[in-house]
Length: 289
Image (tube, rainbow, N blue to C red; front, side):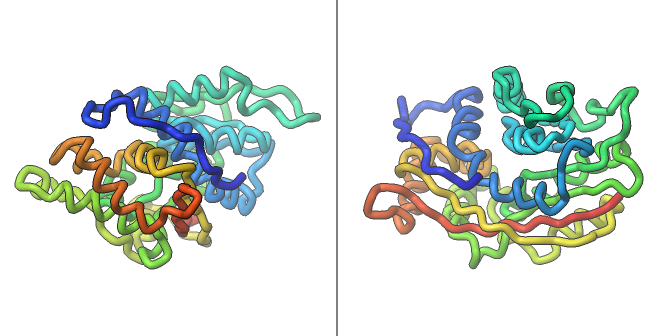
């Protein structure tokens, strides 16, 4: 699966605050698929299949779960964003993640709208794969946010289980980096500066530092090309704002201003046919418990 150019979306009212349900759907319909090459590369490398019991931290609207389930894996996902999680439930209820032909029937995905500890595999074998596919390394403090989730999830995994951490690649390999810097600039105000929010370049050892703090042993890494492709400028703005990386900027200014400045930052990536294309590289670290 590769990123596809998504359908055209128009803002109903660019000055209005987009409700949580609309933003979650923008994520599911526009942005989430951009990371599909990362999910598939990891699953291919780890040979995810019918014997895999996977717990996905921050599973969002469930695309990674669907891909793993299509390979035969038993999947559980947890997320604190209940709107995204509701969309994941819709996807599985509509037949997503059905077993490949010739495999035995299995339970549907288990989805938990709480901390990872709520996903304890009661009466079943412990997880042998934990994934954290929400990339770190583009916002101050996002490494710290992953640590509590890992502390809660690692005890649910078998000894020697695999844990996959993901992050943004070097800024010079990520065309989206200058757009993310817009979020940091807009968020710079007396109110937000004290919180330490904003974009910052990923560091080479970000993932290794998180692994060390969680007591995980690195066991390999890789880089994956994940270009962000959009059918038009409007779709690109909606997709990027659905990530949550611009929330501080919107609070410091307003949504209309954020949309305007993100659109301006995207102009260098606007192609003659009206599509937007930004090459990016993401990194993953494979660890063992």
